Length: 158
Image (tube, rainbow, N blue to C red):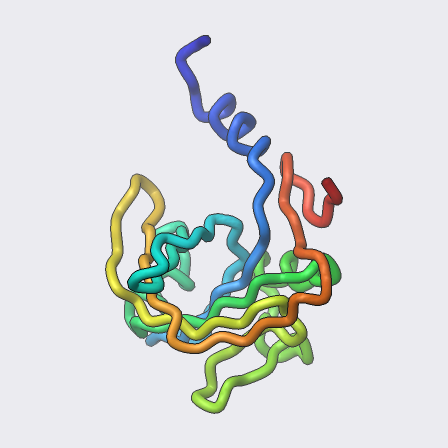
């Protein structure tokens, strides 16, 4: 074993296949959204999940301000949506890929899972923040495979 550096650590972590999701929230800078792969369940009692975002991002600020966010877990047919929400310049909310809940929260149309989440606690970790949240509403569509991220590639099949 060797002492890890940033390049080696990034490469090592790319070997961990993950699902892909989009988070959305509305803060003082308007509606924001981002593609994430850092998402995990934390607890079943109480129901808790964790997401991770760069603290420099507008989506981080929107979630921190709003205290609530929408979470859409993407299907394998959502690669373009993942790229759209990974972009910093695209109009993410003006397209037909977005649908709204009754309260106005944005979700990705036809995503595998839609969850409305309330922020419980925030932890700082270097350049990123960990948001622990409680799901307060969800909708499932389990009939398609998930979008996977592995070694820097979206949409791979394992």
